[in-house]
Image (cartoon, rainbow over all chains, first blue to last red; front, side, top):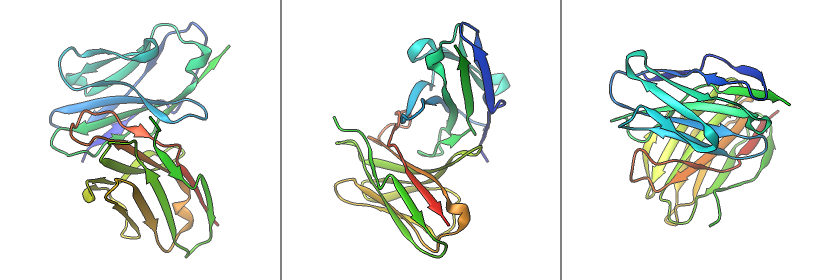
Length: 114
Length: 114
């Protein structure tokens, strides 16, 4: 069965620090990978996605993620965080052939100290 | 373009009761999926409807059911409520024709079972 693991449930950083949020998945075949973000009081929204091509994917607000197939990972990165990045971040995976069912990680709450 | 609308925003029920939640997708979207979100658990997939047909179903008991109408609006029903059903229920819509599409989420219905 597919599963997604996000290693850190809570992360606290100061502004301008670099960010890396881990995401590992288990699925034997081809995958589509997503990062969604939920800012306080707002809807979940797509940050970035990978489905083929360049394994380094750039998303909105300066975020990027790298798909490393050999490690079953899709870590989210940002070189310098801002206070406005405070949010909950979710990694999600869709195994190609598993229809439209996304499997989600438990989420990482990121708090940026001003 | 109006976003995904979920009603009601909050619900308080007692054990044993049943509840119906509503979701109106973005105009033109034919796929509606439902998720249960609880702290520390991430999003758990309930089911997905496309053009009035249930296309996918998660691992929830039969007390959880749904349907989709010809205008793509969807309802989710939970019968014989249990305390553990307390959660934020999210719906998301998309065109439903491409497995890589991003999902557009509503604000959710916060259900409390007493």
